[in-house]
Length: 291
Length: 173
Image (cartoon, rainbow over all chains, first blue to last red; front, side, top):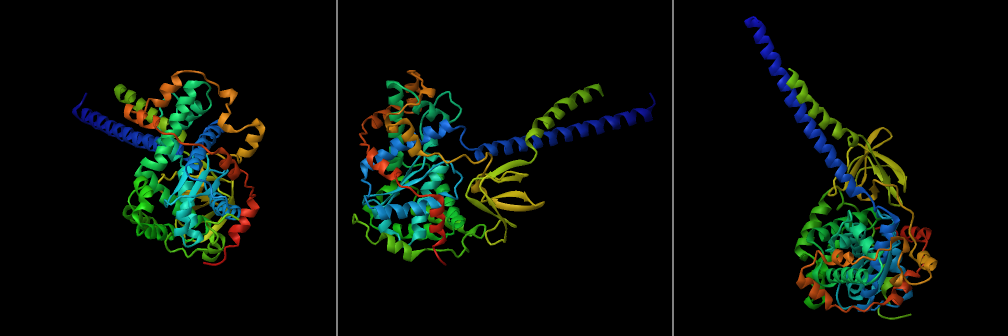
């Protein structure tokens, strides 16, 4: 082989090697990006089956009944109906149309609200007393709706097993019979109650719920500043009334700072939307009475 | 050169691995309706309103921290709130009260026969994630349940039309 031909061959080999390196590089980036998008799709996906939803609701009922065992339901038909109208209006804009949400007012001096899986949401009388308009009520309910739609409690339960997801595992526990199953279910219910009243969810879940709540307010036509206004007011109240919410949530300062960032994005904070102050005052004026 | 050709095979494999999920993704409106905007910003004009169940085409899925999901609408780029769409068609509303009526008793004692498992491994399943101290603490809980109050709440009847009328009656800011 001549020297010139050898040089050409060497050059061709270098070019093929370079092309190969580029192809492999592009392929790796392309494949990993595509797989990442596929895994995002999992976040978008809803529950696997109607059985999972039934299990979620049944578990939520078990926990919800215990919330009501701890704090009595305010037996005030008009007020309960009003809170349900506000809550269900928000739920129309959630990503869980398969759930029927129920909203109740519970008697408690703790300024707080609770959500159990499957769509059961409770707000305390003390929290209602602090609110000044319907948008603030909507903000608190929207925060709780977000915990339900994002399945925060189910995912926070320390249950492990062969099932593919916490939801499927919960369905296995809830749908089983016998003493072992009852024990497992009881432990899961106890964990959920501990999360609601003592331990709280992860900070990220709470901040996410604040963000979802603010966006849900905008999507539903309520003042997006409402949660910020409500939390600012609650922060300044006496410590015994806020002890539970402080124990189970990130600090007010951190939540307000996070909300400030949420409101600054995407034109959210500039929206001039309704507070419905008069309607709120009319519907809550008899709070504490039982007509 | 033969070695070079062989090296191309895994690279092509990697490309093919990514291809099935690289195309357009169909998403579905989950909320009652959704406003489609010309820009990812609430101040941007609404160019269409789509009802629950409408299929949307997304070339790229937004991550969970995003407010907006980019879609293709009438041949142009458009945006909808990410929290109002999902990859599966919306499921029908599940009625707890109908379910209760069907089984004829409270769910607190209900067991679905199709999912019956009687296996002591469930206890292991239930507690495996717990430390001994956590198990001890949880065993001390004695929370009373009030299913009657819960059923009272579940008895509240509100149809969607009534809820929408209530929202529409709020008035100006």
